[in-house]
Image (tube, rainbow, N blue to C red; front, side, top):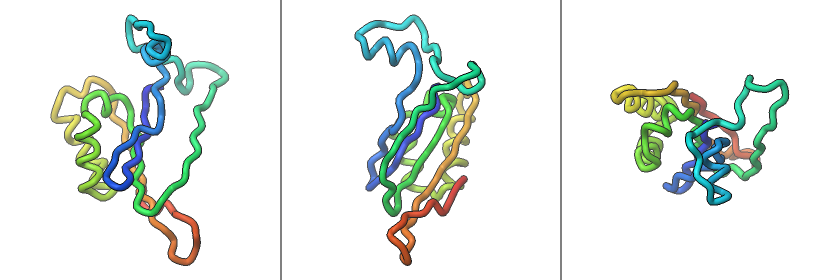
Length: 130
């Protein structure tokens, strides 16, 4: 669908997922889409094709999953600025608050994760979820 996963690492915000829409798929083939029709969504079909990501998590990485209601209203710079200045709870509250101050044309869903290294292991754990 059109939800996105971002990672904030060392002050840089990176979009990790690709939107599954006609606009994105047609743009990849240098075509123009008439609208932003979603090509994958949960509940739309009996069988779904999941997008799978694999990446290493480092200490202090922050992950942000959001619906189009948020990323369609706020720019990447706004999202990165808020994520850099807040913990997980503060990030979600601040971003939802900014969207709701505007017109909020779509639903707004946010999940924020902060990773912290386990000093007794080589693993990095997700310790804060909001």
